[in-house]
Image (cartoon, rainbow over all chains, first blue to last red; front, side, top):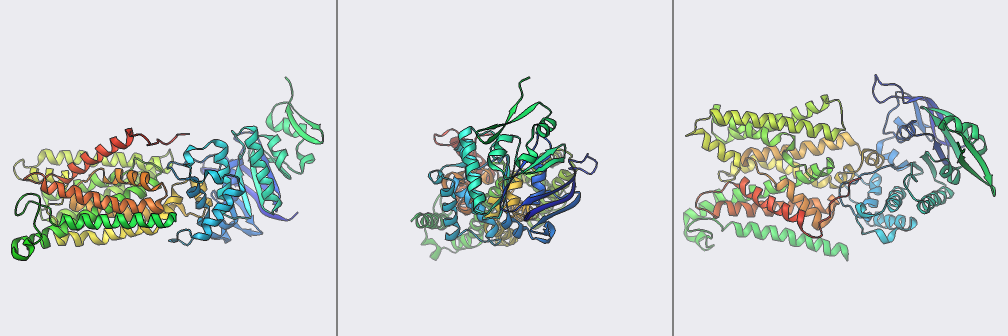
Amino acid sequence: MNKILSLENIHFRYHPDAPDVLTGISLDIPAGKITAILGPNGTGKTTLLHILLGLLKPFQGIVKVSGKSHREYSRRDLSQMIGLVPQFESIPFNFSVFEYVLLGRSPYLKPFQLPGEGDVRITEDALEAAGIQHLAEKPVTEISGGERQLVHISRVLTQQTQILLLDEPTAHLDLENQNRILKLLKQMSSRGKTAVLTTHDPNAAIFAADYFVLMDRGNIAAQGNLSQVITAENLSTIYRTPIRVEQTNGYTMVVMDRI
Amino acid sequence: MKKKSLSRTFLFLGLGVMVILLVSVFIGRYPEPYWLPPRLLYHDQLARQLVLNLRLPRLLTALLLGMTLSAAGSVLQMVFRNPLVEPGFLGVSQGAAFGAAVSILWLTSHPLVIELSATFFGLLALLISYLLSTRIRYGGWVLRLILSGVAVSALFSAGIGVLKYIADPLTELPELIFWLLGGLYSVTWRDFLFVLPFALAGITTAYVMRWRVNLLSLNDDTAFSLGASLTRERIILLVATISAAAALTAISGVIGWVGLIVPHISRRLFGASAEKSLPAAMLIGGGFTVIADDLARTLLPGEIPLGILTSAIGAGLFIYLMISIGVKVRRHE
């Protein structure tokens, strides 16, 4: 496996005297694939994503990007390599969609530089790739949740990073919008981008991902391909509820067992 | 095309401020109320001296004051992700006012000493707010700073209350009150030169870093992922703009509302991105303060404290903005 991101024995806690949120995680993320990090709420998925991003520093252990430790990269280098679609972004000011997506060019601007025509073109292309060019002039505070998520993805596209981290990208979205977002992700991955997404919904993960990581209580319960990880036994254990894994027309589906 | 029309708007705005400044040179109450005929500058020695030694430094200081408060307000509202923040909110205004009061009561009424004392206490209040915020054990950094700013402001305004109470009602109190209400009536070239470096440092930092200000208005994780060095960039922006505001407060007294309302107006007209709204706020704020100061020295035979005028006009505009059609309130999630 050609790994682009790897975690080695990561321990993390938010305060020195608080209990560990992550307890000795080791994980390799394959390059050019979609990796889904699955697990119940509050199991440390977002924390793990923030550690991959470099926002949180592990208490112990090493994060490597393309074989080199996070610490060997400057902030600027790292932001040209790893982009983030956050789970939740409150935007207190009425940026237009275009202005907001243009912010994705920041990693390429010098400290006092403003975006130029090239950056504007890249932003227009990103809006088109996400199919939201018609929203360009609308305020970000006045669009729907699904559109908002597409705006976030456009912003990360203008950032032109090799690695995309997406925190619950389909949470709170209806089925049509979930489908749109996951298809867009697959398109990006087919062009060689590496995506890591967290989700608590196994079906969304199955739809999009090539590689699966199951997390439970700050640790990794299983990792590997679909048939290795998405089993009734694994899922029933980590979600603490009876779960069945069914095959329908060649598709794998996860359903809750009737109680 | 769009870019062209935008730079034309800025050109008009810039020219507008220049015209306001130029016209303001002739607005006052000498030799008679409201207008000094320009030709008088040739004949009247007193008119010439009044314009050169008093009105020009006063106008330029008003311009700097408006630009600085608006730039600081724009930066702080975005960096704190809170549209209700204004430059004095970390205790700086009340600290500076307390410093001035200390000087008037116990040191001397010499303007330079008042200014130094006001600047010192303004920055001291900022430092205390900051140190206090690092000791609060809950909430994000925005909440912690705002809470400690509120507490420090309240402490210093209690201090001002005590000083007012013990001030000599015939000599010290009127001076103190007039200073607290804010005004530029006593500004000289020396005052202007005193604030110039602070103001230029603040305005320039805000201007050149305006794209970073946009970035800092996003959530921490997004801003970080886009390459922002959160702590470092915030500190640079806060120190530059707040010390500029503190230095200006030291010579003008507490001038309310400019730093709060002008950034709102500017964002409404030019959009949220600080790329345009920040320079526009500086120009609007400069023009607004110069006009307010024109009114302050002209309307009545005696000087109207500038702080009263900016608060009255600012609050009026604020109410208008809040209730007028087309103003959209941010949707909370």
